[in-house]
Amino acid sequence: MRRSRTEHLQIVQADGKHVEIATAQRSPGELTTQDVFQVSPDGAYLAYASEKVLHVRSADGNERTLADYLSRSLMRFSPDGKYLAAVLGEERPRVVLLDLATGQAQSLADFARVKQLEWMRDGVLASVSENRKDLLVALSPTASPRTLRESNYLDRFVAAATGTRIVVFENEPSDSATHVIAFDAARPAETHELATVTDSITNAAASLDGQHVAFTTALALWTATGDQKAQAISDRGGIHSLWYAHDGRLGYATPTSATVLEGGRAHRFDTEGPILMLRFDPLSQRALVATSTHAWDAMGSGRIAQEPELLGVDHFAGGLVVWTGHVTVTHGW
Image (cartoon, rainbow, N blue to C red; front, side, top):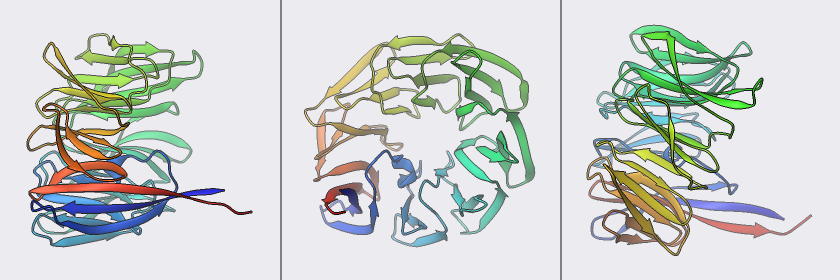
């Protein structure tokens, strides 16, 4: 028995007309939505993956492409919406920077493996493997790659998109714990341990300035401010989406509910269908929720669209971009 998922990426225009821009065949399973499609923070561009090609579409319909965007590749828009960083290639994956105004692509570096990619104020930060070592490397179009941390226990990291603060999550086998460590990119040797947890980290996020960090385990949601010790603020399990909005609100979602923390208040959105995605619209700051059949504004509890077999949604070009997928089962020997 073989299961496969046929996926469709469509733009739903303001008049309701659907325009399909990509289709793909994939095995069902976990896949980071923002590495399939992503809208730039200023709403001017849509980046999406299709047939090993990364497409960058402007709001007026013009497109540029980058080849060799393979399965499990990564892409991230810069916080100002001027650049797109992407991982291209297979044998020696390279980190490429695309200038969205000129269309020029610049290769910043290549590695044996690139595991994670995020933006900082001065460029791109990448978790990579090279010469049997795991490294956290700062990449810039105007400087040589700079190794900030070497650790064979690095699980993931978050970074200040508009600053220089970094928080890493390292699995230390000697004590069977995950250590949450903060430092500044300008002074990587000066570290502050925010937490030591015995459960595996399942998700993590940082505010734009990096002063607020949230992370989840299978049984709890933790937050930390500055160099203060992290605190468990919820025993909610199964959190699969975790984001900070540009205005500092924290949003998280489980299959059964979505919550947005604003100041001292918690706004909760519940729905009968399983919640597959939560993300903040960078232009309106609305909390967008995708269930298997509908897209919702979680803060206003209003239905934005009805789409069968929905996987993800975002706003683009005055309408929506929706990602859907149909699973088929083939029986045979």
